Image (tube, rainbow, N blue to C red; front, side, top):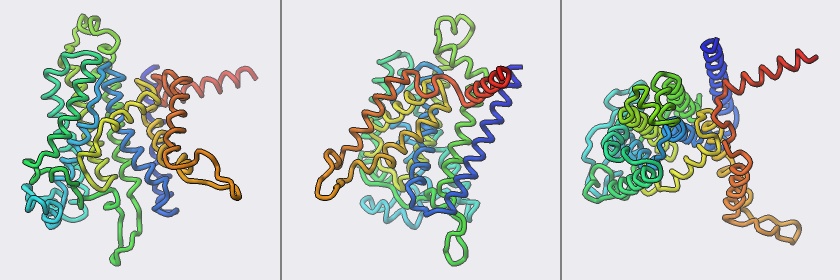
Length: 383
């Protein structure tokens, strides 16, 4: 019975996701592509994936890691380095006299199909690099617990950012300079022979990528490995007594989370149209952690919903607060540059105070749909 409910819930979520993708595709080809909603959707898709991967580690396994910005940086740089066109490498790496990497994955595959395959392979390789580094640092770091683990992973993020700006690695990472000219989300827009866009996919593609990755995360969480992660979160001693290898499963959760964070880093580079180490600062990790807390620790659905609300509120809905306004000759007080973030911070404090378990708690969308159905049935029975 429970298995049937889980299947019906998953089907409902897949249906909602498909409807969202179709809606975004229609909107993108109907209203102006410069509308703020598309910027919000792109960034929300990236943050939703990274927040979900952080939730896998912090919410489902109980490991408090703060190294997300570092793993995003690894994914972003791996993607960028492998996809910059060969003819553009000399201008991008002009300070270092050219790039040490002499190929581009999209060009190796060739054509439109090559663009898609090249981008996908580069994103996956970005995730693999992040997972490999996570495995290496996880050997000593995962012996730590709670705050000590958080401090160690936070330190990793700062170290990796400094390393990638090192001049000795300039021919590969371009030092402290930005990597540009690689395929972005706009590269997937379909054009006719005259170069006019006939089908816009720049907002559809990141949402599709994020949906596929988050779907894989959900399948993992609902598998035997996911149950082992939850057991470790609840009680490590009891989990070990049940035969769960703590070191193996912690390392596995850390690597999987880092893999999807690396993929999210590559997507962030596509969103920002550049990759530069100075952008992957500690505050980015705090933003992701805040999204996880607002959405609900232990809820992937909550992370996705909170990502959109966070980005929309900070980048779009409250932006008018940064502009001066006048009523006649009277200037409205407080409205000036920076006031938006003050109001945004107050809103976040209110949300955290009144929703201490987050918007979704530890529930997922299927659970919410089942609750709504049961309430509807009870109302019908009462009538």
